[in-house]
Image (cartoon, rainbow, N blue to C red):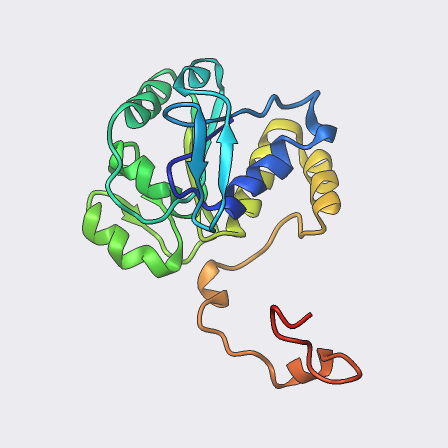
Length: 216
């Protein structure tokens, strides 16, 4: 299941939904989205989502995934209490991108290794000095608590969870459906501040550059 906070990053949530909530996975996973209270939840990208379940849904979960959210204000209250209670029961908890801020706010990352989006690394370190942050890796497995780096690294983490649950073949089938690599090497900083290759012009349309957004 996924626990979303206000300003949830829709891309992060869609990763978990595509991996665990796709119709092909219904025999393996029962995917539910919940928030502190059911109803409309704003995303970080100019639209909202309707969430049908509240925090009581976490009581039946064996895995809770927390997508990233913006702005990165301090979160508190029942949602963090639900995460702490789930962790105490031994529930597997994973964050995608800046979702690590919620796990750290709940105290679940104290003394543990973790990662988050490279662009928020210094902010994270300043707020949560008790967490051993590694801003380069794509994901970190600390037993029942796992974290992924920025955005698409959530795909790497979710496929890793599938491999742990059902083996390499099932993870490979999901990766093939999503048209992504089953496993990527290296870390997230290899993608940060990297200039476009000079050959980028070769992908332009034969009649000239692609039109700007809104000019179609």
